[in-house]
Length: 248
Picture 1 (cartoon, helix red, strand yellow):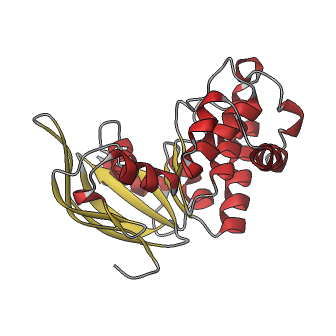
Picture 2 (cartoon, one colour):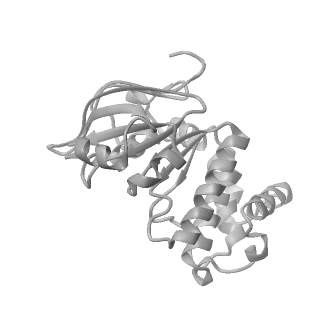
């Protein structure tokens, strides 16, 4: 795998018991690319993201992420090192409601530095400064001390993006980042994601449900159906209607 390649999969297979989640997936993603992953429910989109972050075991083929061969990865330390390089904005956000927005963002730093002190909230002062800067960057500096369960859906999504920003990882995985948001909040989140990815020159791999958003979020779209790649084209090469046809 070359130095500029972010992801390289060859005949990748991921199982859940006897059920095949991903089958014979072969693709290559270069550093800095913006990828939309689309498909119906159960197509393997989230399973692919989980494989990239080491949460799904590789049962066949090979998967290299940022120079790490996940197919032979063993041990918590190696997994922690990988996950420190892969920031995530989950569909469920996985924010701790009773904690402040600042504490939730600081947890992103824990993924990067692995310090045990972070888990007992003895945050180093420089980490706090960086986390506050991340919140300010997404327009949520005012909410640093607010419990996240007191924030709106769009505001919580921004806190999740700030957490990923604070992790300072070269790759960002986003699982339906605009799900359950109204049109105005969704537009804000998209603009924010695009600005941050451009600033950091990060690789973005994003599961997208609303196919009309694909050209705004990505420069390339990968279509999954029943765990297999059935199309891999430029984001502008197919309309939303054409993508739906391929997904069937």
